[in-house]
Image 1 (cartoon, rainbow, N blue to C red):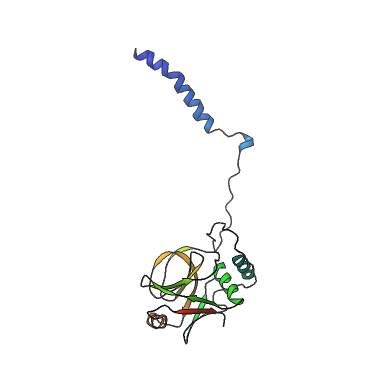
Image 2: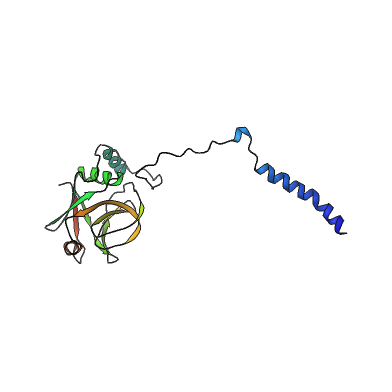
Length: 189
C-alpha cells in the first residue's frame, strides 16, 4: 500500500520539478541586461517624481544658473532687528532655495516645534536631498520639500540640509529666535 502511494506521487513530483526548472529558465528574447552601476553622485535626489509644480520647476531651472559651492553667496534670515548669516549647503536644494530668493525675499511665519527648532511653511515645494542626519544648533533644514526649519538644538531625522547659521553661539541663536512665533524673512541681502 505504501509503495502504491509513493508511485502515485511520482508524476506529481515530476510535474513540480519541471515547473520549477521552467521558472528559472530565461529565453534569449526575454533576457534583460543587468543594470550598470552609475557613477556615484555626491548629491542624491531622493524625491520621487512629483506632480508638476511650475514654481518648483522654475526654481530648479533657475538653480542651474545659480551654482553654489559651499561658502559662496550667503543667505540671510532677518528676525526683527537681527540678521542671521547662513552659509548655504552644497546641494541642489540649497541652489533651488537661492534661486527662489533671487526672485525676491521669502517671508515665513515660524513656530516652535519639539523644543529644538522653529519651523514654518516655505510656500512652495523644492526638490529634496534627504539624508539621515543629526542637526546642530544653527542648521537650516528643508523638511518634506515645503517647510523650512532653523534648529537651536539637536534632532536626528531624515531631511535636507540647506545651510548653517554662522558666527552665533547656540545661546545667542536661541535668544534671537525667542520663545514665541517669529516672522523670518529669508533673502540674499
